[in-house]
Image (cartoon, rainbow, N blue to C red; front, side, top):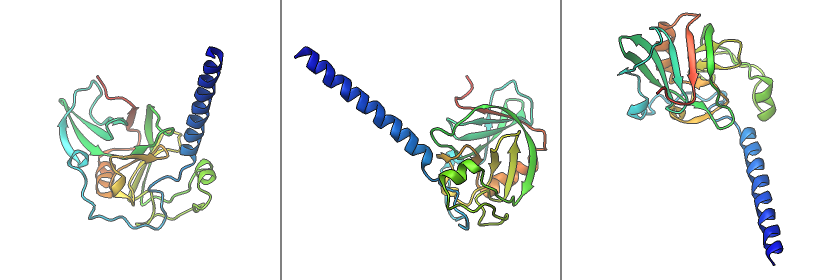
Length: 199
């Protein structure tokens, strides 16, 4: 009887592991919320106060001009020096698409064109292979390209996704905020992406 119970528990555990794995794989195949070509941003969307651009106290040893992204907090900080930063609310990558590292802004574009990478096309075959920049483009009003990766800091045509984790790894801001940040940072700006807040 004990062996039988043990066998039952092993089968239940295995089934749970298979279910968990298949759920994770299904999550990776879900459409990216906000990557909806042709949708015009609803600028009447009211952001939660936590995700509105604001000046904050921020202790760091990084020099002024550095960008620090905290995936967990859904915030992007532009360091001002003297213990201060400008804080912007962002949308971040969903489970399975979050990352961390140190990169630089290698290129900037106003009303950028969008060429979804092959991995995104594989997940969402209905996406266009190319879309010219403009108000209906999912990259929004501005884009800042991160190193040699496929990731960007960019605007959005879905302001309701700020503060959420739904993207394929890019960091999105409302168009007014991304335009403000774009004017403040040059190509070459250091960008630190952290999944956990700095202690």
